[in-house]
Image (cartoon, rainbow, N blue to C red; front, side):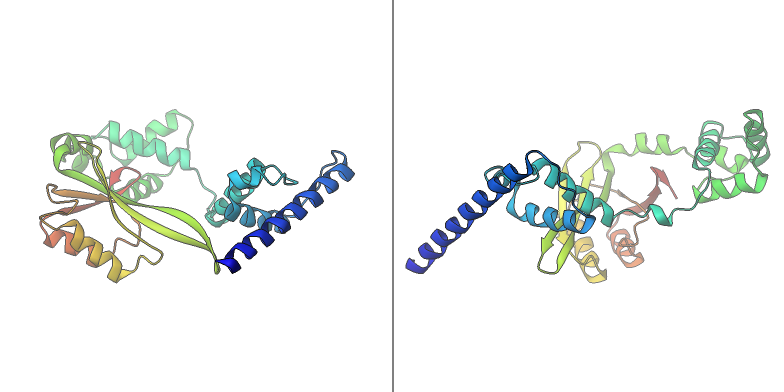
Length: 259
């Protein structure tokens, strides 16, 4: 206890010295702006996140706590920035093709191509075919015979559940570590249940989560018949098979549409 008290007093003395030093430095600067490099911003953002915004307000830092927190959010966002990998294309045309097919079940590839030409969009028939295939949409005659996705949702709303991951970034001794949180939401009543949290969502972890989900007593899918998932590779074939063996059907979706 004596040693702990001495360490605490020593830390307070160090903090007071740094505060005084910062105040003198700010007086010398006289309002001049300090330009930090990207590496310096990253270093300050990481340290500031560990300190916390409330504590930063008491330290009279050279950069405001809001700016430091903004730098940290930008640092986290850069980890998930895959814009350099995106291919140049015409996503607005693809969205228009999908919308035309959904709103006009009897239209085939040629009819959609003609409708696009009327809007001054020159698109090949094969392009229309490829876009619809990527979105899991059949040709005109077959599409008109099937139950629409909206009709299916309305008919099975009470027995539908959806699952997804979201991530939280945590600073550790090894740097920025991603924690994956898997949740399940009941679409009828919006009840959300946490299925698990891990830094390594591997095959063994996903299988155990699947067993927990289909448990008849406390599983999140106990009263559900369908589970909607996206195309995330973490939903492996073994995971989907386990859920289906448990009496539930797994529906894979892309942009809100089944594939």
